[in-house]
Image (tube, rainbow, N blue to C red):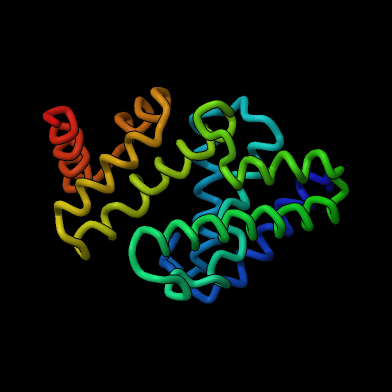
Length: 197
């Protein structure tokens, strides 16, 4: 096996420890394992020319995320931002350790870390692509389940903010997603509301 295959296998082994389970392919599976595979699939579907660093980052974006619960931080936006920043830092460290063990050099470990921390998001095309992929996975895989549990205005606001995070290419890919009718309706409402100011 190549070092790329070794790294992917190690990422997946870490994801498989997620105690949170979701139904996928007719069976309960670790949530982060399902998510990471969807990230890889979405990346290769829309950006098949993605670099090795970007393919690695997509597979480990949320590595061991369950170990730092959002509830450990204060409610509200400030607490959320603190949690997000610490999660990104931890993801980069965990991924770097696995990459070095798989035979990659420090430069690759650092590059994947930069992508996971989403540094220079609008200036770094690869970091922006990783963000686009995460947004697409949210819209296609999570919106339908997430939306009914929350107030519609909050959902529309989240979709509008998700849209702003994406590049023009990401937005085009989002418009081409085969979303359920309810999800598509929410996206259209959010975009109309955004366009109307």
